[in-house]
Length: 336
Image 1 (cartoon, one colour):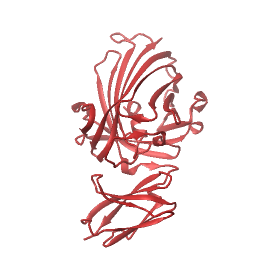
Image 2: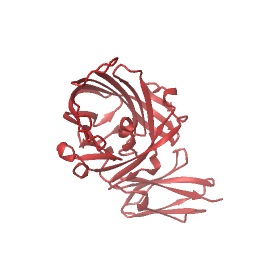
Image 3: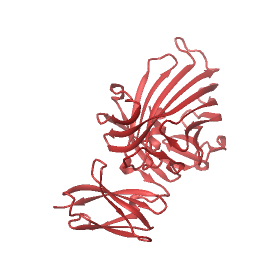
Image 4: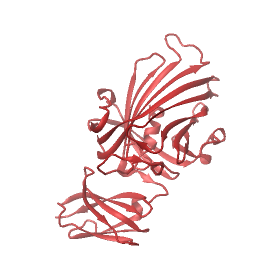
């Protein structure tokens, strides 16, 4: 299950806005980023929801039974990198590394390496996962091929495939981690054929994996949720889902929660927010991700003061966006 949900686990971040977005390449993950996601045991009791504009996708009833932690590094730092010379980014999850090219045009998969079994999947023709800018109604298809080998089994085979990608919805996403507005849903149908595998009685070499990925421009590098239906080798369909621990995501070279100084915390009358760079704007979010205060900073300001007069006692989040568009979120409390 980890392998199926790795991409979902690796990509996670921060979002709270209100209109349909166009997501640019600045959303892409970067080396130094890390994230945790929850793999869910009851995914098969859910459907992917409806396509179209202004949808609400409610996955609040998902039950998490496994946590997957992932880290982004430069591709050259990952084990097995010599086989993926075109990649510039890798995602590490335990003994597995997945390799990508992330640039202004696209996010492309180049394959993966698993230390267990010394197994490689190497794309000779990269598979496009996203093409930028990403917007509602966008669609594309991409052919790909890969070679696959494992020292443990001595099996070698190839795979030819076609991925169809469509941004088929926008709206609000609800997960056990919170409610996220201004989300795009990316539907991908990956159909492939394995060539050269030893025959297995009752199975066939074909497979189809349909994935619904939910992303937002305000959560750089994160799939807030992925819902996947895998139909492999003629076996019954397997449904899986994972959702991101968005507030705990670390943005690597971007600003992080550690770069935000909030005082006093807990606050009563007012709270001061300070960062190491220059602030563009600050938002106060309630525990459901709703914006309850929005303040634009003065030019070349490293700090901003927010009144707590209109805030009821309880927990809140401060979202800071700096002048370069980097963003981070930190928790604070208002006392009565």
